[in-house]
Amino acid sequence: MTAMTLLEHPGKSAECWFVNALLDGAVDVYVNYARTPAALEVGSQEMVRLLRLDGSERQPFQTHSVLVRWQDHARGRVLASASIELHAGRSFTAVLHPSDVPGSYRLSIYRNDFSPAGRACLEVRHVGFGPAIDWSLAPRRGTDITIPPDPRHGRLIRGQWQQAREVIENDYRLEARVQGRATSVLPQLQLVHERLTVAHYVGRSPSERRARGETAAWLVQQLRIPTGVPDQAGVTVPDKPASDTNSDHRIIFCAPPLPIVRTDAASAAVEARDPDGRVADLSIDRVDPDPGGITLPPETVVPSPGIGVPALGTLRIAADVPDGHYQVRVRANPADALAESATFTVPLTVRPVTLRRLLRQVDRLCADGAMSHAAAHGLRQALHAAVDARAAGNPDALARPLARAAALIEAERGRGIAPGSANDLACQLAAFRRGLPRRGARDTAPAPRPRNAHQDV
Image 1: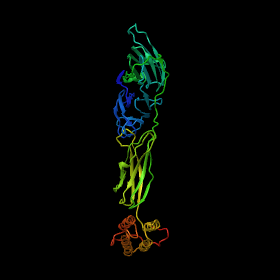
Image 2: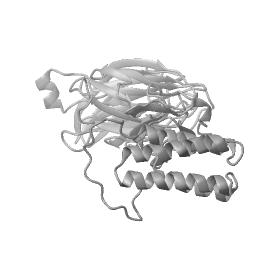
Image 3: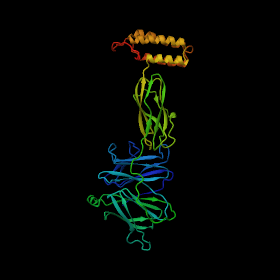
């Protein structure tokens, strides 16, 4: 027998313990798909506390997933995984054990029952050899004959559990049989008042244990339980674990691709939702390539107000971000938080300013009343001349109408063009001029083609 820690009721917290019921070596345990283990090198028949949550943003009450790999195999196969919903006052024990398929494993998560009892209680969990076991509890030889005998027995399929409730306090002998043959005996098990003793039947077949020199086949933990009104004595019906599958839902992002034009300061909503949890934070993980000016300000982030409710944030692109293609990776929840953390890439395309776009901008401003007809007429003339010069491949002829358009914007600022609109136009025109080849640079472009109505210059 391997004695384990006495578990206390978690109070307003929530907790999950982990037991390695395999005899094949140590394992690493991961929570919520994290890259680093929450528990390292958990040896055979060892028990550790995996999680203790306080309900804060970094330790939220929600569904958490547990994944197990062999020690030092961070990218190796997952031996088993399961998920469980943790809330205040709940306590669970996740047990890694063999499954019904040879060479494979199962993670069974059991609820730790702290309900009151008038006498001692025993819980048996089958997580070892044999598809089914018959267990029996009887007083040890030599115990006080004045204590009434209180034998109990049951039958469990692998993964199931059941309780012997209201057991008279005494020293007992616990035995497990597979197909009528005794496979493991716990010769001394003391059941006492205000304790729920949990006995995990573990280990290989008797022949394998003899060949390997192994003897232990029971793992025991105890829960301190309050005294209550004595209930009816008996053995409960076999039941399955609280969970033995991973039903956790991954975080879902909503952030469409962003096409914008250079010099246009822009913003876009980013949404992340954990169907069975909360998203407490949104941030930019990285931008590739990073020109600066692409942000997700913390003050724009609204955390999930409840489980399954989206968290919202605002992605902002500054007006001076150069044209190009960018990959903006957004992270939901910090990477070091206990809650699930995930990333999503938002494609961002900043298109260059074109003369056609400047002409459309002039038309829109004139229609909106932000530009007089006279100013619009002058700008259209200058911009159309620039279109013709560029189509002809004449840099010198192109520079003159562009300079005329810039001078006209400054001359009409606050008069024929609203100041804000003049600023926007001047900024866009300056960006277009910066993108032109320098004078004197070697022109390696192909010969110009005839311009058509759909060509955007």
